[in-house]
Image: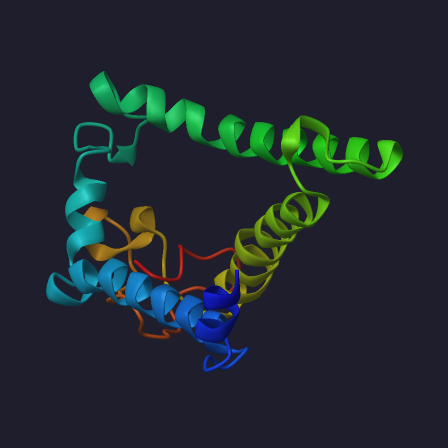
Length: 163
């Protein structure tokens, strides 16, 4: 115990926080690299869902179908389960299922503020990227916008902001 205290005395209390910021920044850069290297990556992926005969997008078939139909319910189930754990922790005043109340609150806030508020309410309405069904490459009249570029191709409920 004495050796650990002596080793910790030289560390600044904010060091673990900066480490988290650096890890987040590195993860962001790694996730952004494919879109920066291949700006038309989302058009390539969208072509898998495009049915040229009907000139429209169709739900995927094959191996991708379970992901397509299961992703939204999975996110809602995660949010519901996390809310239940948070409520039970608050009511019981202990960590139900071994999950700390602060961890549950963090997950709920991350879901609400990240995809909920920042992307759906904020960025999608102001970023201006046309949805794939509306771009010239798929028979629409709008121009494709590469990732990380703000455009004027859409007024509200636009395509996902990153690509």
